Image (cartoon, rainbow, N blue to C red):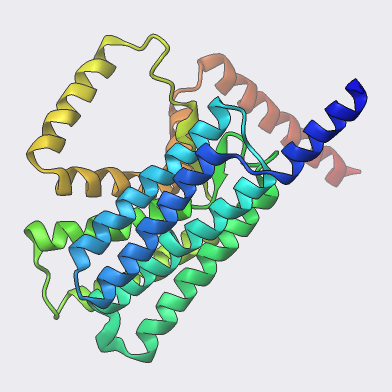
Length: 274
């Protein structure tokens, strides 16, 4: 009897779905649909805020699934479908209706490329999630790309006011760059490794307090700055590391490099003489 009961429990778990993380994924999808409807009504700021709320739900559903040990293949696939709507279709339509409409065919081709690259990014993530992307992301995550577009919309309505002379060309270039970054092999840091529960230096607390004050004063500027820095971080992290290693080598390491170069040159001269 015990074996039959255990078998039935395993079958029930296999056929059922976990409620809590999938509810948050549904919240992510709801925000994406709301953003699309807001774009149709020309309420671009509301659409941008909805995309940011979708990114919050997307972060929470994964954390809750890991904390409650309720991760499943169904949840991964459902999350990807919701992400494609909230961070692919919604920001693509937002960019087109907000700025890319005057370009006509070139504008909707840019939007299509952004959505396709986002879908490819999600498919690659699902394939590589178990090994390659355990710590770092390969390519720009699609929620970060969508949040960058959303915060740019909010910043423009709040302080920039680019106008129809600059805005279309700027957003067209940004859309193509974001699409390229999503399908690239550039590595981006995962925020999963940033754990506030562990002890941190005193300066980290001071920086967080200052960031909180700036966020309260002007959240549009703060959010755009954070997502812009994250988008740029993948491009500059590797060159900065190489320069740091180059200019911070110990004298002993420099001597070894010189000796290695001299050995190679001596070998080449010997081969030529022979």
